[in-house]
Length: 450
Ligand code: FDA
Ligand code: NAP
Image 1 (spheres, rainbow, N blue to C red):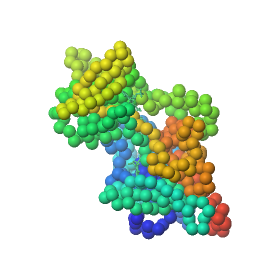
Image 2: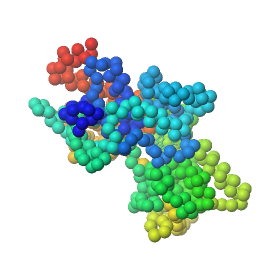
Image 3: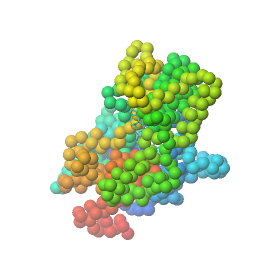
Image 4: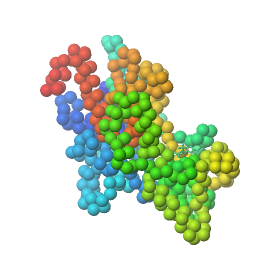
């Protein structure tokens, strides 16, 4: 494959798989390392399966806001003077003054998306879009005893496959949409991750009855959006709890997202790790920001005042079955309140039922057997985010995501990506130096360090 004019036989120090915020942050950390060490830069390239940069585009609903401070951008916690900071973006967009006047730490998702697009535009040479990585295999270099190279197979948008070679990979393929067991998506049955694309393809007048399943942030945002966008429609919210619970973003609880918390989690006891989850799962999962909860309650209350009702909350209820008929989707709802089961027919059904974490085994295939797992079957991961191997491989598989069990709650979030990417970049540099020294490259390494 010819990548941005480079010869296909180039051996990269690292190939990044996926170009969402995590690997963008890594690309920037590597670029900034290269700027400080121009004589020995890290050779990297990234592959992204989307045709252009996009960050959860199907959830860019009007008025939705970020769940982190703008200072938790791609770089600031690692390098506050980076040219890729959110503040630099505001300055370049001629909006810094107005942003400050607005006095809000939490930009809209639309504005953060603009920021990420702006940063991606500065990194175009490092990424190939419309390129899906389909597998990773070990390769043994001529004369070497153990595999020290990885062959990464990439499929282009037109279905053509080719391969590139690298010493390391950084897998950052993101969350995987999850439907309840036994349920499948369809023409009018969507997961929240595909929501806007699907919704915009419909004739709104045909959506007279819609339902949203789930009680997390996605569910609450989509319920509000459907209620506001379809003034003629009945909107049912199927929520497994008695009502939406608030996301705890108060300062002490927020400390679980601090860079230091990663060390405390990683090096803590099993009991400490359990406590993180027991006490602080409600900072992120199955919870909703207070302003969205209040906005929904206000709509419900206004209906009571007006004496009309088209927003229906089905509390303590789960979907147990769905059936597609020609003109509707029939849902079987089970309420644990009275152990009652009922049917509901809707024109469109949205499962905002969350995501599974990144699983590297999907890409590693048979190569995954080289990596160790813990007693419960989860991958073992070093503090610097490498899969642990018992074999004599000298190449590394880094993870950005899929490490909640080892590194804690920030694994699938944005809060720590600047610091994590810096740690991964440092590890790649350090291990390259160690490898070169190990191969008798002492003189070369010393020259590079000078
Ligand atoms: P992300 O999923 O963003 O990127 C992965 C990329 O890999 C994608 O672009 C995908 O196309 C690509 N890819 C996948 N497989 C590939 C393959 N085989 N080959 C090539 N490319 C491949 N967190 C937070 O801290 N604050 C927030 O405000 C939010 N907001 C938010 C909103 C919504 C709607 C969701 C669903 C999630 C959030 N999150 C969040 C959590 C979210 O995980 C986080 O914002 C980032 O998306 C994490 O960035 P990553 O780069 O790790 O994954
Ligand atoms: P989530 O928090 O995992 O919530 C999934 C919800 O679906 C839970 O309430 C779950 O209930 C429910 N559910 C699962 N199966 C069900 C069934 N069969 N019947 C009824 N309910 C069922 O997922 P999410 O809301 O998509 O959030 C995922 C991540 O994206 C979070 O990090 C969130 O903060 C983020 N996000 C951010 C924004 C933003 O920045 N504005 C917007 C959307 C999402 P149980 O708890 O009982 O399983």
